[in-house]
Length: 169
Image (cartoon, rainbow, N blue to C red):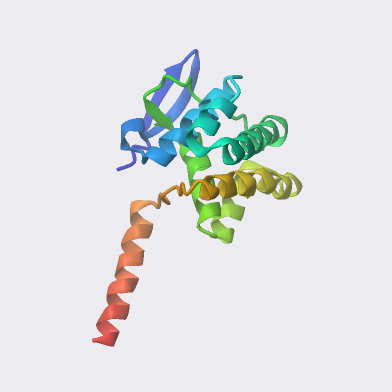
């Protein structure tokens, strides 16, 4: 379950915790480590090439670095990620993971909404390009991020499925 009320402080900056790294899928942990490393100024290429292979890893590293440049240059809000060694997942990190997962799953409306929350309209369209490249590079290596839906949305989806099944029976 997501904890939305926990605030942590690291290096004088606070962030909202939404879970623990241990609760993430292996694909999410890989991408989170790559995001954190790149955000801290360490190139993610070696990590991504090791995990995805040379071609997909190189593509993913360039896309991730391009997306982070967009975040630093034109995001609507100040964007900060915890240090790579932090055991908790920040809300902004969860948003990035959900953005890649939605893009991989072809959920254009959700991807556009997340990008619109992060960027002004003109920059959101430009920032979508590296996200699509990153998503494609992960898919080329047969890595797919699970989609994280709020509990309410999962319950509504179940209720709709249950009603549809009841109509068939």
